Amino acid sequence: MAALAYRLWELKAEAGDPSFAEMSTRMGAAASKSSLAAAARGQVLPTWETTWEFVRVLAVDRLKQDAEEARREWRAHWERAASAAARGETTEGRTGHDETRAGHIETEVRMAEHPERRTRPPLARRPAMIAAVATAAAAAGAALFSWLAPLSGKDEPTAPHTPARAASPYDDSAFERDVTHPDGTTVKTGTEFTKIWRIRNTGTIPWQGRYLTRLNDTPCRAPKRVEIRPVQPGEPVDIAVRVRASDSPGRCKIYWKMTDEAGTQLLSAKKPIFLDVVVG
Image 1 (spheres, rainbow, N blue to C red):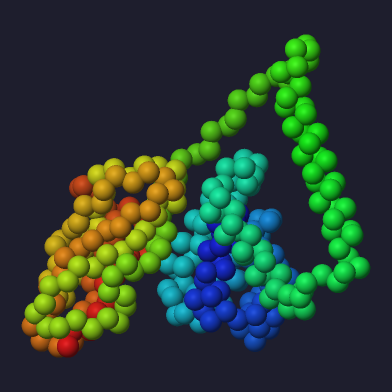
Image 2 (cartoon, rainbow, N blue to C red):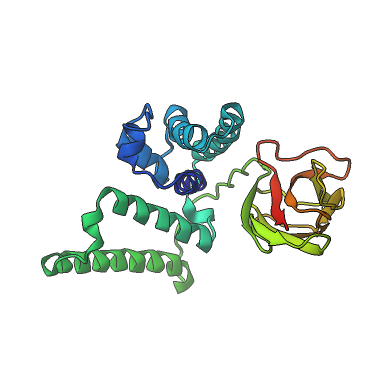
């Protein structure tokens, strides 16, 4: 659910960061501003209808993405979150980076809804805050005691071991950034340069025997496919491709898609990554 909320928040930023009230009224989302805000918070799973209205007004109406393609992509994200929620997954399995990122989302949503909360709490409220911290510390101490009790030599009953249910494996990726030659970069005619993307394996399946395969032809020349080194779940990878600029000025945009060794496209719900430079 945190991953779904983060993707929604990224989409909102890409679309110009409209307020939830604006999305619900002027932009025509068939969902209340509170429902839209809750979807971006990641604490509970939004309905598919709310998720789609969030996506539709931003991705389709504002960013002019293909409606059917957007629906397939976001339905896959939502179903993955719904499956995790049904399995009862919690934040215990998150990495520190994911927890920090989810915390930022929560903070930004609260600030967007209540900008007056950006100030520090009044002095009158600080004793209550201190008491809350003390209560939490006491609870942590009790938990530590219960963990160390079996080491004291006393015979204590132990709870029966319940094996954890294995999560269904899934394949996923996330584009992180252009390491070199971001979109709109100008390169000289006839020169060679190296384009590097950084993507992350956000699924649970290791990547082996995978490639970036070129989907189109342009005046700029590039290899048909580039091998991706083995990548473990959660690990980022930099993928470099050598490109030769065209001999005449113009725009050069090359699309790439992840495939297996046989050329079969993988991660069909994902948009291709691309090189977009101006030759001049």
